[in-house]
Amino acid sequence: MRNLSDKVVVITGGNSGIGKAAAQLFAKEGAQVVITGRRQDALDSVVKEIGSNTIGICGDVADISHHNAVADEVQRKFGRLDVYMANAGYIHLTSTDAVSVEEYDRHFAINTRGVFFGVQAIAPLLGAGSNIILTSSMAATKVLDNHAVYAGSKAAIAAFARNWALEFKAQGIRVNVLSPGPIETPILSKLGVAETEQPRFLEMMAGMIPAGRLGRAEEVAEAALFLASASGSFVNGVELIVDGGMALT
Ligand code: NAD
Image 1 (spheres, rainbow, N blue to C red):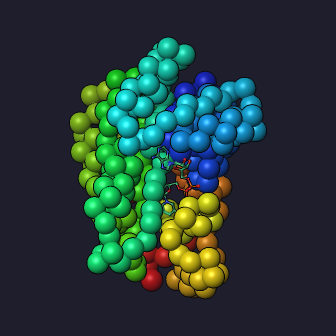
Image 2: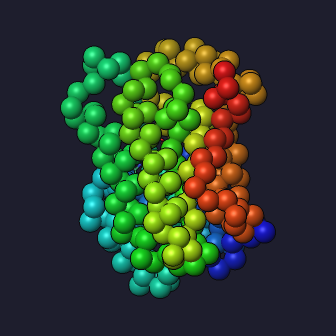
Image 3: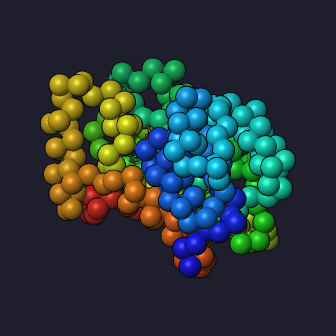
């Protein structure tokens, strides 16, 4: 049921962290994987690592023309798409009084607008039995210190998914949200937490999780595979929270 043989998958931000783990797992399950990201060298190295069933497309999800280029390339190379995982994301923790207009716009351009126009560009390539996975965050629903802008930019994702699950029903496209809690990926070193504070911050996060530890990218990738594959064929319009139970605390 979890096999993705001959499925064509696009994963935005597939050159790092959760996106990379999903790309590796999906390829292992037989998918043709297209990963996108901003850094060509990181894309090249992940494509090389995964192998011949992977291609990389460099670009910025905040740039609408990038999404059209991805759709054009997928159409040209495969003629269709089976799974679109909108995973690229940005976070910089700041208290509300210190949020600049530029930082506000950056969060929404990447986390919100980038998802919306990515789906708009790619939806015509998705057919019956296909699905969309939108990566949000448990921070969209749980209040955490200095998360207001990030949480706001991710909160829109659940609303997009609920609307699209009905809007795309005639095409047979399922749409679900994947909301990780704190996961050990490179994003944790880009939060804006001072390097000296980093160990205390991560320990504090782990202490809020019933599992007593942060999650691993591979654990989120497994949840993504469930949604992407036939295992999740009757799952539509839901938010799957993968946080070791942190939302409960
Ligand atoms: P990561 O930093 O390892 O990966 C982020 C990816 O997004 C990278 O591939 C990066 O190139 C890409 N990206 C960022 N800005 C981009 C842009 N403008 N254009 C194109 N690509 C861009 O982090 P991650 O933890 O793997 O994050 C993946 C997703 O999971 C993000 O949406 C993030 O918000 C979400 N998330 C992560 C955590 C966590 O604790 N790691 C928790 C909740 C949600």
